[in-house]
Image (cartoon, rainbow, N blue to C red; front, side, top):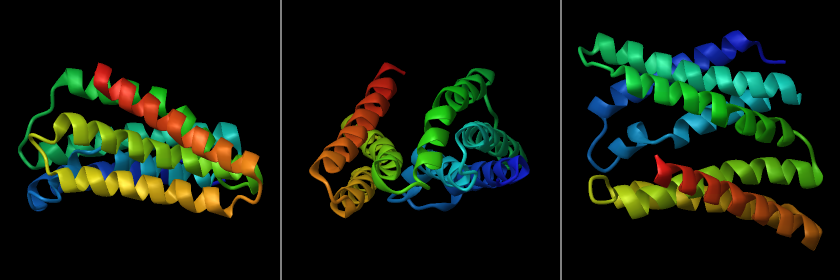
Length: 191
């Protein structure tokens, strides 16, 4: 099991890089620092290395919450400000999104259907957020970022769907990705 201190450290570093990235990145790439996709990816990877479901779920929550704390601390160091409502929003998001990402990360360490569904869920998260950005945020952000995020998500899903040897596994993998994408897109539209 990867220690939870690794989850906190990875989250703090990712959050801090996000805050600094908002000032460092060009207009074409600044959406990377304003996207939840990288945070979800880090939480998934940390959870994956925990392998067992309960510790992976806790690790994903800790990672996402620590991303917010790292972001807040780095923003303060840079002389910026953080609203309490935004901090609360992202901490609630960590508690709600962390367990499914942790489950997906833990499942991705297995072979067969479970492993494919776990990885496909991450692909679906990227597709869903990319679709949301493309359809909702494209007026104020660079469309290319959202297109790349959707393509990366789709590539992840396709890779594991193709690796699956049985049609029913392929259907379940694609179905998991579609479900995750719809949930992420729907929740983002509600917020």
